[in-house]
Length: 310
Image 1: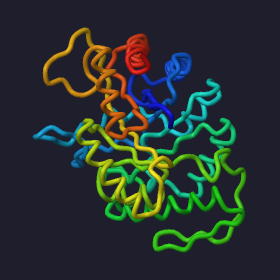
Image 2 (image 1 turned 90 degrees about the horizontal axis):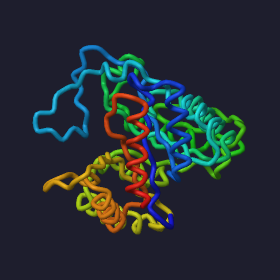
Image 3 (image 1 turned 90 degrees about the vertical axis):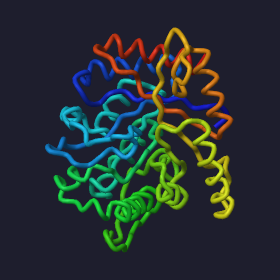
């Protein structure tokens, strides 16, 4: 990428998620010059959860109330709806939980979306974390990493090959043909989510990018240093591999000592943005600040875009 790619996560869940608000935010993002819009992935809201979100940095992290994901629009369906309401903005999932769904179905829907949108999909994928949601789907969370690897390879073959087949431990695909192929060849960019060594290994083996979560620039730089070593060992070029970070932005009228990266005045956010770029970031995907209305959400998006693109 020639410059830092900037994307915004819009809420496909919660009380503000509805057709009018999603279209409004997607079109405003496109008008503002934002590169991409992103949605999240859950299917059900388990009751009595014991799983702890892996990126909760609080020292006393506890299981959360999953009521926040009870009203949740399925991500690829949502992106198809928004593709029809926009013209150029890219369409991402941060992240699609790969083991939740049959890989042939996933490959078909993603290829269809990419073909019909004119090649706008960025396919962020992950292994998931909510054990109770796996149980609701009849899946064993203990095998989610290996299942993700096989399912993603099935998708890649269906997207790339005229005749695709796969024989793995968790999935067998007999020889089949599947069209349409994605508009982007050989497939839409696959950004593998997660900060772990396992996520990095998966990104190197099966992805086109590494999608990291909530890291500061100095933390990111350490991850990128390891990435460069492993890319070189694999004979891959750094310029052909995307490093992206999902991080909240909060525009304020003043800077406060100790504020997190991308929190503060527009000038501070721009300095932080440049620090991320120097640390090796190719793309930043921003969460919007919490809001009580669609007007507040749109205002947050405008503030973030003015700071990031200024």
